[in-house]
Length: 130
Image 1 (cartoon, rainbow, N blue to C red):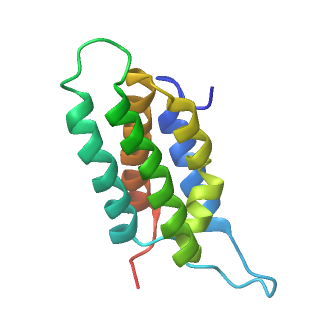
Image 2: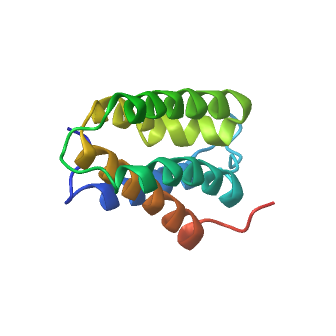
């Protein structure tokens, strides 16, 4: 299990710290994912989160798990479009985290908190967007 109540914030901070250290072959800094791009990813996650919070019980219904699978595809698509997002998805192990959710309400809530923590640490530690 990647995300737990005790680890999601630590993993988010470590991920942003790693992203701030990435250099190309010549030693030049590679720009970190922009705040607006990561906030867009959070918005997609929050849309599902709002519906998940109204579900009684721990098991997510098929329509929600389908939306989570689609969310994974959106992360992959955005990662393919922009190197900064790709670095975030890879270093943050986002696809693995999404796969871990399966039909668990609690795991989705942790994932949502994790993405929110990534946004917060990006805003706090990252340089200004270019």
